[in-house]
Image (cartoon, rainbow, N blue to C red; front, side, top):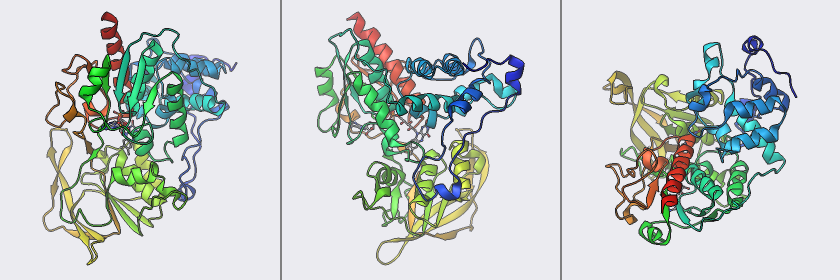
Length: 469
Ligand code: FAD
């Protein structure tokens, strides 16, 4: 067991950095960028935790992870104990430890922010979850009580998986219906391998299957079966089909060869493994120069993927300034380190093509920031006459996703709002008494941990409702 330091000593210690692949090396491969902590590094970082009572970090975590308890176990060198503490509330620790915006959640609420840097909660969670995976350790076992009640879940992203895991542990028969050929939602088709290796997602999905959850792949609800039919067959239905329909710029030239939505580009690369072509049969054409339009996480993933796929120059075109970019700070920094060029305060107005219909450039206009809009961010305004052309072989549009109406169309009595998202209360209850909804299909594109939190709340509410019947 490692030494427990006195509070004054803890305050003096600096946050333990995480080793990572060098930028010039990593732009040539799809291996994960950070290496993760060693046991010694994890203990050193855990020793900084003040074990506050009440723990502010837990209040900042939508999955209620028992943060002080698992950190204490790391200091005791009881990593299995730490893993079991995390798994009490979070079915996806290796995923969340890697991709959660911790700076806005648990780490944002950490009291150490007042003295310097917060405890690296995400990195510690990742360390513990990786320990379990490397040893092939699983705590998953089927519930000893069977409630003989059936729940259908539409979508196997973080919301669906979290809901399935909690309900299966309580003794429900849970079936997930997933449109794609692989479970995990954005975790497998959107977030690239170099940020979230797919073997890690598979491992956590397998643990949920070990609880007895059945996953029906290649099963499109709204086509193969309707939500109305699920309502007839099951005691409850949880809709967690995400916000997967890409938004477009609606500018001339957007139909030219070489223009992708970020969804298509990333799905081709991640899920269809285009980055391993010719070992996998999905080709992807990037060319010498790629322009990605957008400033969020999706744009950063797309531009960094384009660079790794061989683009000599990969450029972000974003209509506001760096300060307003919605991507996580770490993702922007990683992109900068990798030589990604940023054309800020720039908006595309037209995609240009050659006589064969292939992209050859993108015409843009410079912008300036005006008064704040409804989102509180300063509204970008066009600078008249500032048009210029960026020569490019590829344009990737990463300006947001919205609801695909296919599920809602087959769900009688389940209300949607004007954007097509399901209307649900804080427990995920919709306007239909047997239907709950959560994750991006309720909130619009958000985060993994918010989807996990929504899945957990819906599971609790479904259990409360079905227990009364
Ligand atoms: P999803 O993950 O979208 O899962 C929905 C599932 O439903 C999918 O598997 C889909 O195939 C399935 N489905 C859809 N329609 C049907 C149907 N008709 N029948 C059956 N199944 C259906 N968040 C972070 O916290 N950190 C990040 O770093 C981050 N990076 C991101 C990068 C990218 C490229 C993208 C696109 C998103 C990123 N996000 C990130 C956001 C995060 O991934 C989402 O908020 C989260 O995955 C939402 O979870 P969900 O379960 O609601 O939906």
